[in-house]
Length: 460
Image (cartoon, rainbow, N blue to C red; front, side, top):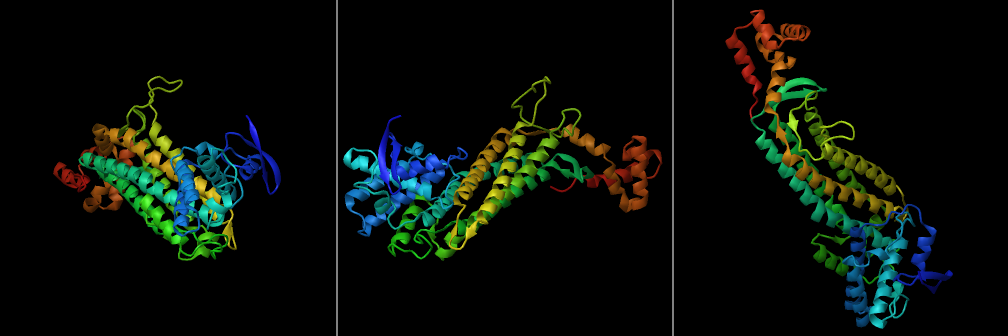
């Protein structure tokens, strides 16, 4: 690969010829190759959006000449559109403020703008990465803002619709299964019968509440740190810059962003990210409960619970012919594990706030956005490839009820708790049903038994 020699404050460095970025980004590439993990497309899009809107406002504030602003706007739009994604190779494990990635964007946009204006790729003239692209900004207010923008936009446009789809699927199944009575279970033991539709209604409500918790975080995510620059006091930023840039970002994303009420809070802490991550973790735990229940209810087909039938997506195991595994529920469980781990990383990252700046912004942003992306994909997959295709094994559900010792509970009003307990023990020891023990002992008439057991069928 051909390289060009550039000079920066630290001396000469060689930059790939096909790169729009310059010396500072190349130094970061050379010095921080930790994991190979790079920022996701939503993060880079949000970063390009900030730079594009900043150029527009700086032009309107007469801080940037027209031709420079137009070139920066065009170059930043290419970042927004994803056309320059390969120009952002930096590892997420870098300087804790995300300065390396902010400068990566400044250099890429300046380099592309210079190509637009002069035909020469890269460099610092006529568009300078710091003086023009980063005008009225600092990494310390840009990166926290980008995290909020990317997270809220992805929640509103991706995750929320996916969760709504899953919620609809679960509600539909709750109605479809409303007439099927099955045994309830507590402590993994037989309990009072319930409607299968009631179980699925509970799952639907879990998702609904998860959506509400995530929605509640919108207020915190909506506050952007832009305008605070280095430490929160807005040094070198025009007093109208933040308000006008944020208005443009809100219009573009259709999200209700506004300038942070207190810039020192917005840059010194990342409580909004932690709040959002906590809501995502709660959702992940809800999904794991639902997926695990469905997996168990479909266990078998002959030697398990067998009350549900799952769509056959991957028939056969590597060694056992005819075996069908609960693939999608297990995918969801693994996603939940990752999201829970991501939340731990975000929490620790938010703990990295000292004085006027959090210095673990890249790891916070990466894990938060990955959780949103994973939950979005998992919810859609769960709905379309699993829940929509579930059917009930009504015969197995009915048979399990008749065999359950928990039916003795319905005898308590007639013969008392102690006698009902003795009947349950006798039925278990003899391998009989509760009904059989009662009839063989002439304890109750068939009419009384039917009257007691009629309460098995709970109201819808």
